[in-house]
Length: 261
Image 1 (cartoon, rainbow, N blue to C red):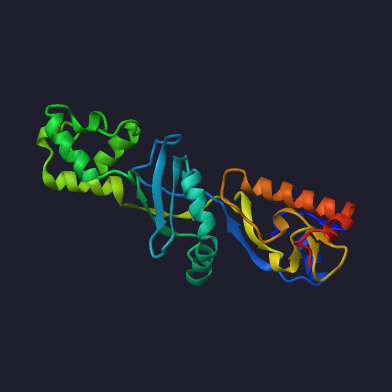
Image 2 (cartoon, rainbow, N blue to C red; image 1 turned 180 degrees about the vertical axis):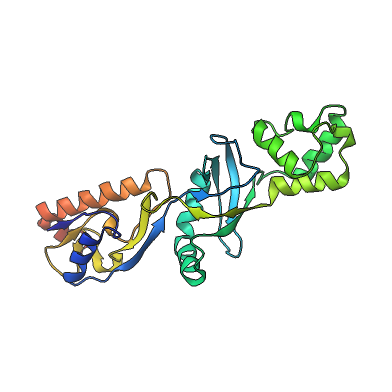
C-alpha cells in the first residue's frame, strides 16, 4: 500500500499512518507570505527587489533572495525561504504569545552595498538633481525609492547637494535595516506546504517502505520533508513517488541496494 495523501494537516492520511504504527511530527505551516500594512509598501503591489536580506527580529535566521511587494504585504523567494526556515519558531511564538503570526521583519534592500557610501557619492556627483527623482542604485525600483525617501523625511524638492547628514543617515537606515510589522500570514491553507508528517527515520529511503509496517510505502508531503521555493517540493513528491513505485514493483532490485537495511 502507498500513502501519498499530501500534507499531514489533511488528517485522513496522517491518522492512517498513526494507526499503522507511525509517529507524526506535528504539522505547521511553511512557505507562506506575510501580511504587512505599511505606508512604505502602499501602492507598490508588483514591485520587486531581486536580492534582499530578510530576518525576523529576535531570531538568528537570515535569508537572501528576491522580495516581492503584494497587495497584502510581502512575498517572493526571500520571504518564503524565511517562513520555511523559521516555520516552527514562528508557530511556537504564535502559540506561546497568542499573537497569530505577528512579529517584526527587518529588510536590507542592499545587502552587498554600503548605503552610506552610495549616498555620499550621490551628494557629491548629482548636485542639483532631486533626491526623490531616481535612486543612485542602478535598477532599484523608482517607486520604492520614493517611498523610502518619504519615510526618511527627505523633502520632495530636496536636491542631493542639500541632503544633510541626518537625512542621509535616516535614508541609509531605511535602505539597509528598516523594520516592518507583520500582522499575519497568508490565509489558512493558502500556504504552499506544511512541515511535519511521518519522520524520515521511520522510512527506508531506498524504497520509501515503512520500517515498522512491511508493505506500507510513503511518498510526497505526508513525509516530514519541506523544501524552499523553487520546485524542490515537487521534486520531493516526484522522487519519493518514483522510489516507492519501484520498491513496490521491483522489491528484488531494492534488496540489492546498498541503502536497503
